[in-house]
Length: 304
Image 1: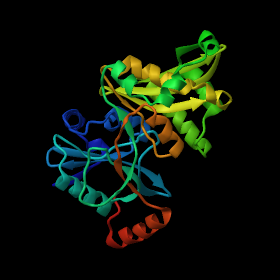
Image 2 (image 1 turned 180 degrees about the vertical axis):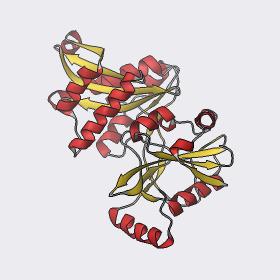
Image 3 (image 1 turned 120 degrees about the vertical axis):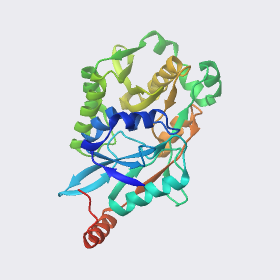
């Protein structure tokens, strides 16, 4: 039996235990991560007594509750000791019958009988760095061989949130609304204050040319942001930074690239020779939302 539990009714101890022991374990489903990225706007679908769980983030648009994965939260989905396609189908059916869905992302372990769209993600699994580096593409290895002048005048530093904020404000791309940029910075600041997030910067002649933000939890290092000064794009500072973090952590941690759907980003990530890990998604247009809303109103199925 699947039931919906509102945020205030969630047994967070049972929820955490279910996540910790699940086959699909993901840092992005933790209470800490969800509370920050959704501002505590998420329900939980529960199978029996927390044998399986599914967090459902939402927003309100004109007073209407709509399921929408938050910014920087790539994958959620169903979590259980063993991924079970039949149980996953029950969760999927409950979600679709009871919620208006704009965007919902499952995790790469969830399997379904129903045909769903998918997105790409890339992951490097824990291994000796020497083995990982050996698998890098020839092009990526060339990028990492910096010119002598660059080596002489460059360095990698861990920087503070305030230093990172200034660089992000100057060089962020891909966010088409001022609100999105503010939400990004607010989320990064919250993760940083909880010591889950680090900012690594590549300096050339004492100027930051590239910076990455990495989130650490659940034996995973996730690339949450990659920010670059376009003037220095050919210097390969981003490659050097990612390789540096991989080198420091891959012996004990998974490195999650958190994406790869844009052709240019996919090509960049593939240079590190990670494993392709597609995950299922539900994405509906505004037109479909309007249609579904009318249907839900008629059936009295809108959840508050």
